Image (cartoon, rainbow, N blue to C red):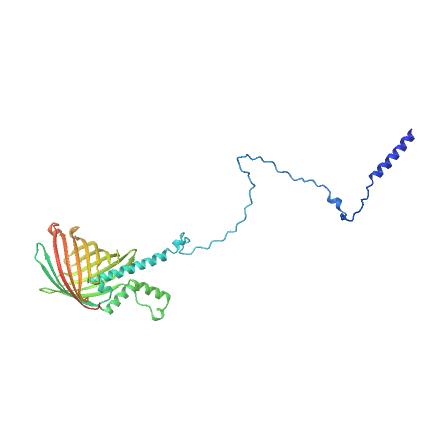
Length: 366
């Protein structure tokens, strides 16, 4: 019995050994041979990384995506601001605004100066002769009629004289001496010269006589300067005069000119007069509208408020005036008509109407 069991065990062991021997596969012409290490490629390597937890998003909310990694931005270094730069220097419109305003201001100033020179020259103002650098002789006769007074006639001769040497000395006093010959072509010298020549100080003198008995003589010296301000030309005049029957008179005038149209000038007048010997101080203020109708006709409208300083500063009167002027003969003979309505304090501010007729002849530069 024991022998039979031993035999049975040997037979079963040999049979299992034959089954465990691997069979050699049959080679085929259509298959490629595997590499010798193909068994190691089939080895299983478990993934030990932790799996992400499942997130359940409600249906009414969008799925939350993982945040993206921000890219590194390389910032450029800002250029150091210039000395005259401001916070508005980088705005495109404001960057070119100063040049635009300068060009506009120069154009407006040129237009106003041209119109003012035209009307002042036509109406025979002293400013036109001074700034246009002309020497002239004026002969004038005026006849004024009042409603309640006797008429007054007036003869006047005015000579506008130039003294070049004295003018140069005055310019040197206010502006300094000119540059040396070697420095005249330098950029700094050209810039200074341009600034001086735009609105220079102007010094002029004139003399005259009122034909009366006894005759009245006068002589005057004036210093002028203009400034360009937005939409206006500001004109400053300082005058020192000597009149034979009144003594020394100091006058300061400031005008502001603005062109309303090509032929209509608006002017604001502020004037102060100081009669030194009688110690009388007066002022005059008000607007004027000066219209150049044609080349031979012009009219001006004015309103003035006058004041005087005595024990106190108070109003001395006010008035309205119209002045029509016409060229009668080749710009050397002119005629005028000037009605006015005055309200002086001496007449208790009652109206005093008057009308003036005037004829004037010019000789000299035009």
